[in-house]
Image (cartoon, rainbow, N blue to C red; front, side):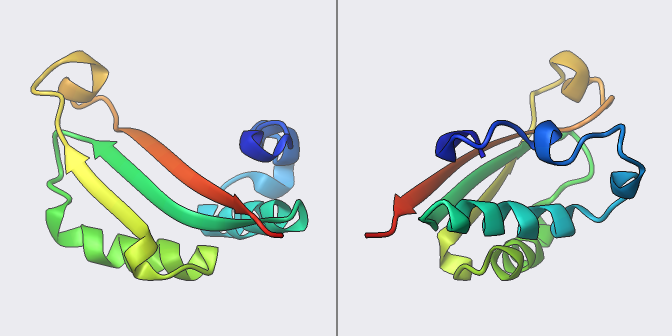
Amino acid sequence: LGAVALRDIGYHFPPSDEQYKGIDSKILLRRVMQLVREQGYELGNVDATIAAERPKLKEHIPAMQQTLAEVMGAEVSDVSIKATTTEGLGFTGREEGFSAYVVTLLIAKV
């Protein structure tokens, strides 16, 4: 959203709004893609890294790629997901949570 000057996710889906409490994140992602496309952009590709000590994500990655591609209206080959650990460092290493880093290429439609 920031890349197309539409502020942040909390602006569009405020956590204080009850309609978003417990909502499936795929619904929000579909809406984000709609907003991006309305601004004249299309998805180029996605490169995501998930940091988690457990569970091991390797066997789940193909299904995650398929799901994200379907929701975003993209090809599976345009969605890269990698998993790593933090080797025991920080909150992720202490198994208190996950973190994710995502780079997304948006292409202006001409």
